[in-house]
Length: 102
Image (cartoon, rainbow, N blue to C red):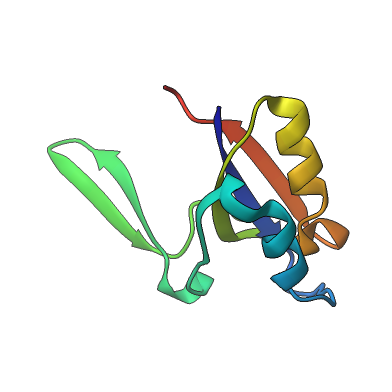
């Protein structure tokens, strides 16, 4: 079962810790992942009569933002939660897990 992990952080809060240990522990269960560019590089598209409205910046008006993502393969949600709880950002930010529709 694949899960998408949204790695969310508050820019005013920073944590300490390298992802190296988490990456080593997760091993081949992590299929893909990366940090995302800053909010200033975000673009949001909205439906608009006759086309699409394009806006600079993220969709949500909140301090917390999606800082990165990981795709992990796990036996079940319990294993995904265990992996997500060990992510370095989980100590000061939030990790949102979503099963991939397969």
